[in-house]
Image (spheres, rainbow, N blue to C red):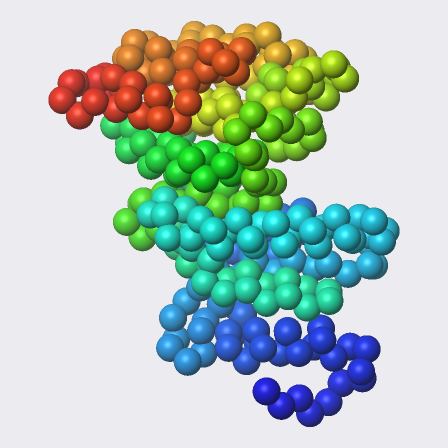
Length: 299
Ligand code: ADP
Ligand code: MG
């Protein structure tokens, strides 16, 4: 590759960015995160559209330690994305470029956007539609767990929809490898979706830590939310919401639940189990009667 300009210290950065811009033409912003912007982009050679997640890893706003943390996290995200690409319900990483101040991750474009926005528009989903979404989600989670990967940020904002309304799981920013028996202690994720053991472990040094069961708790929160149109654990004072989570305190008492099957309520209660040992695994959840095709469940 030939490079014509650029002061020496800026060269690596400029080169990687140039490589991206030569191949892709970035367009409108379609999503934003804490340290990333996601844009639609066009592959110049073919005219095909993709999504690019551009992450800034410059020192401007960050201390050297924070910067290294962000870099390390981004490398981990890319590594895991490469490992899981190809699953029908996981986002496909097409290409990646790393420079000293930016990372570009090119993905398949999910044109229908976030499950979160779809739910907001529909208010609540039918059991039939929920079944199809949850089956795909649990298949993706089962695949991750079988590969010793825990996602740690499952929520409708990170579940994307394609043209055919099929879902793909995305945002592996908090994902990590976890060997069987290995435990984690780090407090990360999104408050409303945090499993009780994540919260307990952050408050108690003697707690043994948490494992991949946290993803199944989040699946329970998602399942509840899709059917009710509102989350199981919510209080305007966050500390009270966290207490509700730790006590597993939620109710099926809003009017939406009157018409819902006992089968789906049973599945929710087996996912929202405070004790991670008692909680269903992804494989067990997929075998729950809610997913049996032969029986009729609710609407
Ligand atoms: P963050 O780690 O900052 O949350 P995400 O990977 O979740 O970043 O991306 C932020 C948002 O960008 C998503 O919630 C979604 O709205 C949008 N987005 C991300 N990837 C895609 C994609 N492949 N296709 C369409 N939209 C996407
Ligand atoms: Mg996200």
